[in-house]
Image (tube, rainbow, N blue to C red; front, side, top):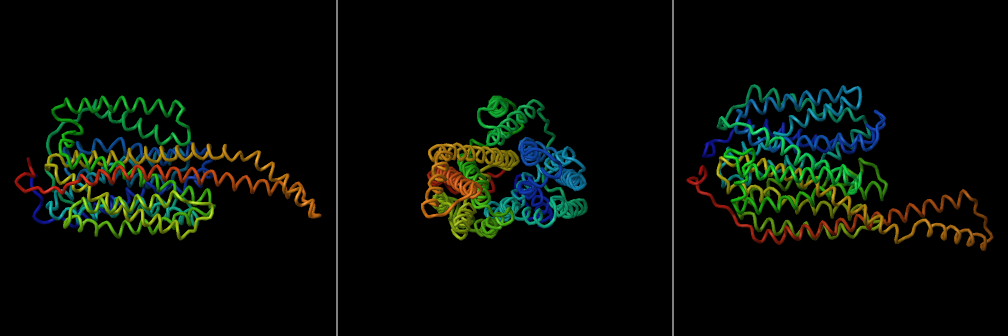
Length: 508
């Protein structure tokens, strides 16, 4: 189909939105609940982390195949099958009697969820003409950004007041409703082609993206010198290089790298990767500060991030309409300038930074993000002919997954190393010992007598304060590096140009 539809299938798009929303929400919903699951199933932190890492791995590995699936199969068949698989995984998670079953359920969920985003984006591209895509993709941005952003808040509330089972219980009805509506109300609006699947490309992409995602996502816990980190990253990088060379040689590649012949798609892709790294790392660093340094509950930590999530959701449709009017460059420049300044302010945290300061800085940062992500992505996709849309959306989704994992891992590693360095500079053990002696002498001079228990308590509190000070320095340094990264994206945004495509060129 070379031309957009005369009338967008709004009911179909609404059904897709529901399915995509629960799939995206499911991506971050479990993060806050991991400690509770550890207790229930008596597993280690490194084991329970697979519920989050494994979901991301399966999704990241399968997204590259979405271009083939969307081109080969009817969109109704594809969505119904994906939603059915996701629903089965969700139902299994609710009744999981042990950790192994729960992990298997998460993998099944990821299997169904992996095609949701690319399918919805492709149907949006087919449904709306270029001049109206900004507003349409702005609504899509609301789903893509808002769902994972509200995940931690919702998760914190449910875990604190109920149990982790309710994380799946609340998703199941929406999944079933979306599935039933799709069975009875979905239409096939995208043309299919009898393309063949290159199995070796699938193997290479699985090893490549899987290796990178696994290596970077485990680096913060295992350390960069662990063989499962550098080994899997190396294997993944080699497989990815072989994958790229194979795609360039194949007449009908799994992922067509021809999309990078279009300059605005390529530019948007680079900026999108940088923004994903900055955004996802911020979503991890902020809760770390709030929970580990300030010691507030997961629910309160999630609530502090909620205004930022709501801001992104509110702004996404508005940004889409502005994009249709003024193009991507003004939005990207202003948005990235806001992100850069707000990230700078987040690099100035102290042991007693006010909650108001945190909420405002984080919310303003997310406001800036909302002005950048969808406009640059939509502008790049507008430059592609219709036949390359499945490949363009698949590559965008894959790179965002990989960039988010890599950005988070790198920032956490930077934070950890800087924290260790700061702790060594503070010489906590020796300093605490000296301060305890001083405290005892001071008390003695004042005619007071401090017991060993009192002195030990004083020493413990002092050590915790100094350790928190070192962590704050590590978090601040990570935010500073994130600010430098966003400056790179800001400079690139000056080279963005608005894509104007005539209907005659859309199918070429």
